[in-house]
Image 1 (cartoon, one colour):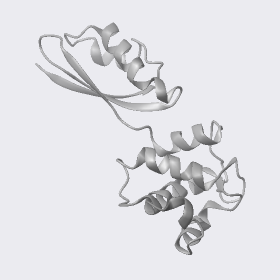
Image 2 (tube, one colour):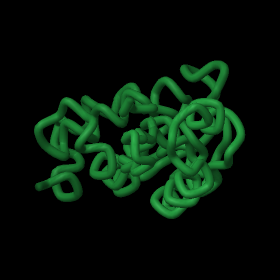
Image 3 (cartoon, rainbow, N blue to C red):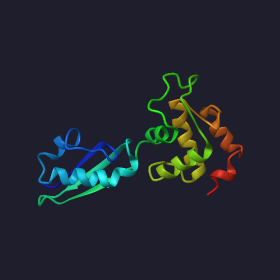
Length: 158
């Protein structure tokens, strides 16, 4: 009865409790070994919610695949805030520079629809707008226009 379990866990802080423990309990794997391996592999995402897939076999063997945290989590971590704005159009909670936006775009590139860094950065800008995060001190809703105008070509070039 091999199977797959998909959960969101705090990076580097998974434990045998929910959501992981109840999912793994009925399986043949050693829960503590799985938790330990997940914490090793997600340590770089300390404190962020990280998607993890655990595939297990009847003999108790398992493999772990760690995904990239949601874009909002990467932005929060990079900008250093806990929650987005309740009024993202008028109340701003943080500011990112374009280099930080590029870093996040590169981290998320495998999950984004964009085919290059420039368009990936525009996708990140959209999430910034919904969180109430400005980019280079300006409303993130104008970021696409600034990118298209070539304002960041030197930073976002491939």
